[in-house]
Image 1 (cartoon, rainbow, N blue to C red):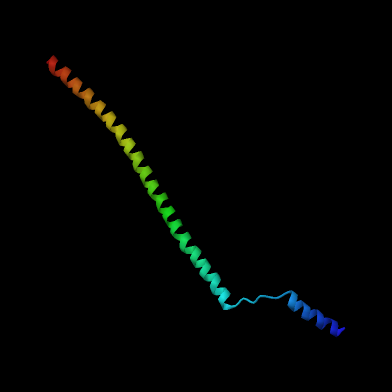
Image 2: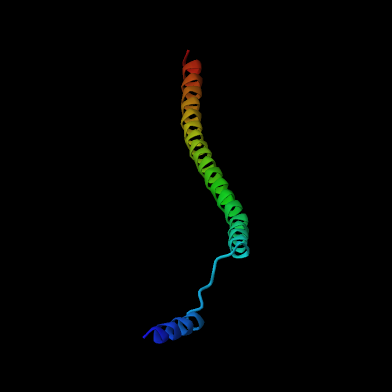
Length: 92
């Protein structure tokens, strides 16, 4: 029985070759992750900056449109005051 187990153990070693994780494999994995991170993080940063700048631009656009509308209202008010002033000046 012992010979049988020894033979099976030897065959198992050759069939199921276990790969040991050595320092070179670990270094390869770390370098690969660093390489991927080198390209991923700048893209994330740039995308974030574009997002925040577009939010600022949209906020300024809304303020600009509001100010344009206020300008129209004030201009119309000024025109009506000028018209009333001219009418009243001619009457007296």
